[in-house]
Amino acid sequence: MVIIEKPIRQSISLPSRLAKRVRALAKHQKTSANRVLVELIETGLESKEAEKRRFFELADQLCASTDSAEQQRIKEELSRLTFGE
Image 1 (cartoon, rainbow, N blue to C red):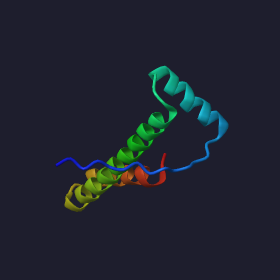
Image 2 (image 1 turned 30 degrees about the horizontal axis):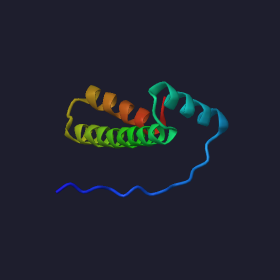
Image 3 (image 1 turned 90 degrees about the horizontal axis):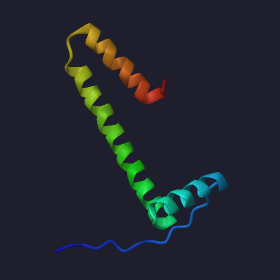
């Protein structure tokens, strides 16, 4: 049985330049600005989850690694994920 999610109305405020970009993207894709926002939010959430999974995979690799060069490489990558460039 398919469960259909009931949409929930959510009001947000966007900076004008961002709202213009969303409307332009919607026009280009021949869809609504709402649909564009939903897709962007879904993509962003999936990206955050993938980033989180990658972090924990690296942490596991660090724990399992015995090579000091590999450990240093993993530490640097973890640092980039945590603090940025």
